[in-house]
Length: 454
Image (cartoon, rainbow, N blue to C red):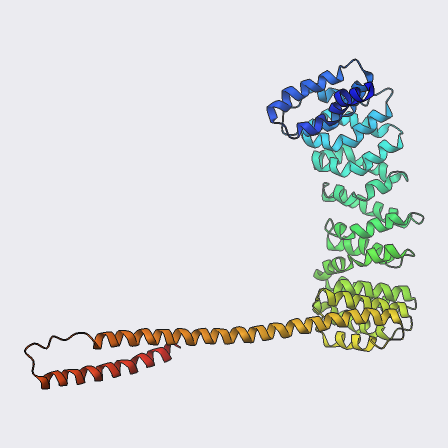
């Protein structure tokens, strides 16, 4: 019973005090909650005091936009003393560091910089890995100047260590975006060496493949052609299938960036085309995956890749034909630009009689999508015809209504009462005859006006 009382009335409020701060008014956060937190920190129970210490980073972040008491900042920096260190407290400090820096603003970097460097210097693997995973966020907050002066060397240290390289390499392109262009050049060779010597860590190669498109946005065409493109083509021949498939995805963006330099572009397209003629069935499958990315650009695909793409429908390896069928099936489901291409449809029809069951299954799905597209188009055509007929009917109805209104006006004018006092019968008959002629002539004019407006 005492345990539950202690948990609900002392421990639990300390654990959730930062959550309460997120929903409180600013004045309450700055005074009442901070005062309550100080009471918890000064509590006689070491358990409550330690729990409060662990929550200081979360509390500072929840006070974002409010005035943060200097006591909280001093307490946060004291989590990592220069001599001796509680690993649990230091880990919480490292974990919440980007959030605290974000809440306090980049101006506080001069105060927190020493704390950050002390954590980096400590040889505690969980802390270093946490800092490596978030260094790009710190760079975004502190800005290019501080990132270059204070974080550049730390990042290179993380990249050179096998224990931390995977954690910072995943977001290296985000860190580089904060550096000046001259500083980025240094990292190109470093990235190449990481990919080259990661023979036993294929995850690093996969990470580069996932971020390859982002790297192309950081450098000019010349550097993309000389540095990034060779790495990309090397990974397209990687022994791990996940790496090859991930690298196929950004190839379209990488190659299209070279479009401004026709020589580079043509050479890249020729190298892609060589995969189609390779003796390795893996390379031919890679060619098909690359083609799936280029199918969003009808003109480039038809000019450079369509011939080789269609030629693989007769490949001797069933897996290659199955890959072709799956790509076409996906393209049809997405209603791609080439869904109505005559050669593509003809290829699907030929693959319907393929000897491999997997190929026939994929083709059946693609042909079902083709049939759906035809039905949709037919429904659209029928709908357009019906719509046009309805519009014609409405137009005719409006014309008839206009005609009837005009006729009623004419009739009303003719049927006006005439004052015949003092007029003999012959004159009245003559007047009625003229009125009748006037009525019929106006009816003819109304018909002509309605037909002209129609």
